[in-house]
Structures are given as structure tokens and as C-alpha cells.
Image 1 (tube, rainbow, N blue to C red):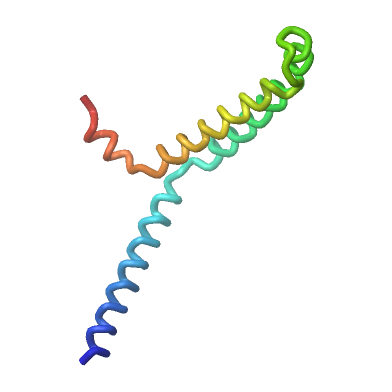
Image 2 (cartoon, helix red, strand yellow; image 1 turned 180 degrees about the vertical axis):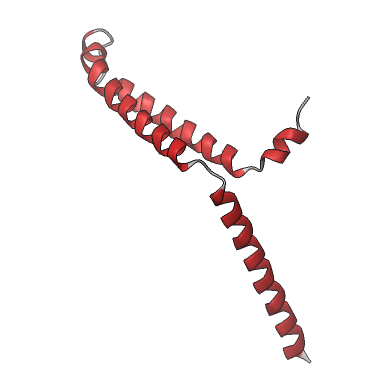
Length: 100
């Protein structure tokens, strides 16, 4: 008898896994990967530009370490990509429901 219940539970878990994996594949298929790649490349180029352009200014004008503005920009970039990822994971229909 326990085997029967265990097999039903096992089948339910397997079905749930395949439904979720299909849902995840469906979501991953909808993203514009060229846009995301361009966003990452341009953000990294901007980070390099901030590092090279603000090193002398940080030392001479503000008296802080040469990579002060680079660190601030890097933290902002990490926070931005985190929020971007969270916003991309949430289904857009939730945004439509919360519309005022």
C-alpha cells in the first residue's frame, strides 16, 4: 500500500518538475539576448571609462583613493543588474495587474 502512495507522489513530483522546466524554458526563450549582451558590454565599457577618467580627479580634488569612483560605480552596476534580473524574472502580467 505504501508503495502505491509513494509511486503516486513520485509521479506527481516528476510531472511538477517537467511542467516547471517547460515553464522555465518558455521564459528563457522569450528574452532578447542580443539586448542583454549589448547592455553588459556597454556597462563594462562605461565602468572602464569611469576608472580611467576619474583616477586623477579622485586623488587630486577629493583626496581619496584612485579607485573611489570606480568602486561606487561598480556597486551601482551590481545593484542595477540585480534589480534588472529580478524584474526580468517576475512575469509581466503582475506588472499589468498593479497598474493604476
